[in-house]
Image (cartoon, rainbow, N blue to C red; front, top):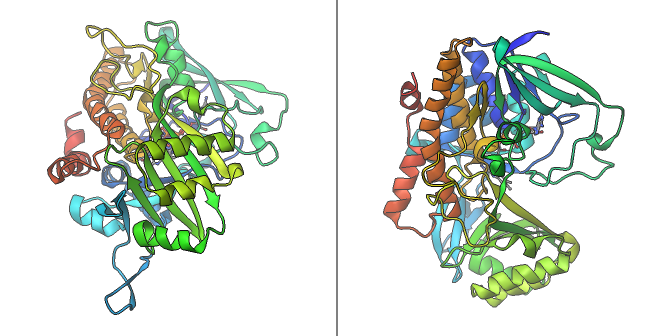
Length: 476
Ligand SMILES: Cc1cc2nc3c(=O)[nH]c(=O)nc-3n(C[C@H](O)[C@H](O)[C@H](O)COP(=O)(O)OP(=O)(O)OC[C@H]3O[C@@H](n4cnc5c(N)ncnc54)[C@H](O)[C@@H]3O)c2cc1C
């Protein structure tokens, strides 16, 4: 059996970025395995922010350029001046408004505004487009679809890890998936045909298989950390209404006047920030929304569309959202309703992270104990497999790119036969990345939108303002 230097399990953005970074640094004997039968149009829009883009640029400039190239192009909605003339403003913005309709934050959407402030831009891109742009930078024979990893087995006697996969079978339903599962007719993964097993060997394995990671499960099971092998419910759920057609004209006018103006999206937040509503325009007279609310897991499970409307209504009524918004929710078509609970792999399992009381926390580690490590022997976890979290600060992929940069740098400087050096490398990785992730997860669970200008600036500098050449020099 061929022995690869590195096998990456998972061809999501973080696994692919890691593989690209390794190749760029001369480690070319690699393989990326993904369970999907065929790479296909799935997933949501991902905002890449200065830290993620800077890390990607450091990993490989071509990857950064490809992502920039494939990002969405924003055009500014025309704004109306005092004379009622429409003119295009320079930088389109995402506004955050309070319940009274006053703007409390405006976030520029253009690449250039972010670049000017933090030396790194901002790109919005569909998950699938991001995956495709990165995948195209790797030789096709090094990225294999239709290989679902079912086990990883350490082989200390030969300094390797065996990765067992199954091929030619439908994927399991993934309750934690970041994307809407397709219907059996649309989804080639559900075609059942005889399955085959295949095994591969590598000196190192990078587990980049997302929040429902098999690699994570395998390295934690039968250890004291078995409870952390599955994601925990974060306490937050999104209640989504995909579309409301033909809203009454006067409701549209009021929504426009008070909240959304000519724009495509606005976030409406109550003082306590729980719940928040993202209101988006789907077309003329058509709107959709997402309510992010702290809800118990039981309250959202197996709920019909009308029950979700009731839940959403209750959440916004309790937070005193005005009648206008309540009317919008009340007339949502029940067939267009969805819910999406958000899960987390906590970067700190002690009290350092405050989750809402609605969270389902499996267990806390004793303060004296160390956190469940992001590695075991020759296996290391990156991206959502290590620290998946709700998307409120748009940082999952961005943080994952920071992991990819750290891991590609460390592996490049490793003697792959030296167990002690491997253990030290993984320690350095966690030493760098875990404190950042604890900070990021806390910011996600209690967002900084209402914080003072000073706190916000300090967050922005801490997250976006870093120089990644300097960051990785600390690893060497
Ligand atoms: C609604 C929403 C909006 C978001 N918005 C943003 C945003 O604006 N900005 C941002 O930075 N992040 C955002 N995120 C988070 C972001 O999507 C994730 O953090 C990111 O996709 C993680 O990348 P990953 O490569 O670690 O995992 P994933 O993207 O989950 O990829 C994992 C890959 O592994 C494969 N895989 C899984 N299991 C196996 C297996 N057993 N064997 C082989 N392959 C396997 C999967 O098929 C997949 O291709 C958002 C998330 C959600 C839900």
